[in-house]
Length: 355
Image 1 (cartoon, helix red, strand yellow):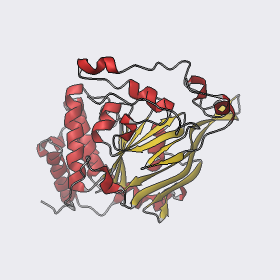
Image 2 (cartoon, one colour; image 1 turned 120 degrees about the vertical axis):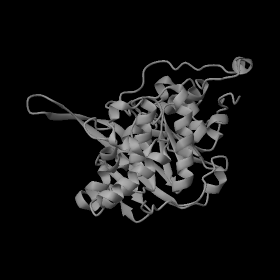
Image 3 (cartoon, rainbow, N blue to C red; image 1 turned 90 degrees about the vertical axis):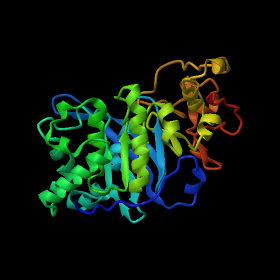
Image 4 (cartoon, helix red, strand yellow; image 1 turned 45 degrees about the horizontal axis):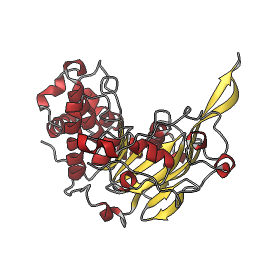
C-alpha cells in the first residue's frame, strides 16, 4: 500500500485555552456576499439579497469553530465562500496570512482546493449516483493529475477503512449504502487530498439520531489523526456544544456573538443567543423547570430589506430607541468573548441549563 501523509497528534476539545496562542489558519475580513434581485424581460437588477454582510472572524489552526444560526442567516454562504464555490462580493479570505482566496481564480485556486474541502449536508445528493464509490472518492485527485491508478486505489481503500467501511466497497455504487455509510464515503472523499481545513455544512443533520454520535466521534478521531481544522456549520446547538472549541452566532448575514468553549452556553451576551440557548433540549427532566423558553415575536428580517439599526431589534425584548437607529459593532468583551449589542455589558442574560 502506498505511503500516506498522516500526521500524529491530538486535538482535545476540553482544553480551549490551548488554541489561544495558536496561529490563524484563516482570517476573514469584511466578507460580503450579495445576490442580485432581478425582474423584467431583461433581468434588470432592482436590489440585492445581503446573504453575508460585512463578516469578520478567524479560524485557528487545529480548532473546531462552530457557526450557528437560523435557516437563511448566511452560515452556509460563508462556508461556500471559504471553499470558493462563490466569488465573494467584497472582503478578504486570508489563508495562512499570505494568500487572499477571495482574489484568486482559475488555476491559481487549484492548490487551495486541495487544502480546503467541504462536507455537504445531504449524503444522498452529494455523491454522484453514476459513479462508483472509488470514482467519487478520487475525483479530486484525478482532476489535479499526477497520481497513478494504483496510488488512487491504495488511497481510496485506506480512507474507506479509516472511516469504518470495507475497502472492497469501492466498486459499489452509492445507492447500495445507508445514509450513515454514504456520509462516511463523503468524509473519505473530503480527506483524499490531505486537506488542512474542512468546512462541514450540517454534516449530521440529515442522519438518524442513532448515527449522528458515531459520525461526530469519527470526525473527532480523524481530526486528531490528520491534524485537521474544522468549520462546523449547524443549527443544532447540542451538536455544536459537543464538538466545537469556539462558537460564532449569525443573524441575517451578520455575526452577533463569538465566544470560547462553553461560555456562549453559560453566559450569552446577545439577546438572540439567549433565545437560541433557551431552546437547547434538556435531557434531565428534573432540570427542565429551571429553563424558561424564550419565544421570539415577529419574523426573521428580510436580508434584501433589513431594518435600520440592529437587525434583531424588532424581535428583541430588551430593545431601546438607540437599537432602531444605530448599528451595533461587534465589541470585544474580554476572554475571547465578543457581541454586537449596545447593551451587552449591562444585560444579565440567561444561558442554557447545563445538565
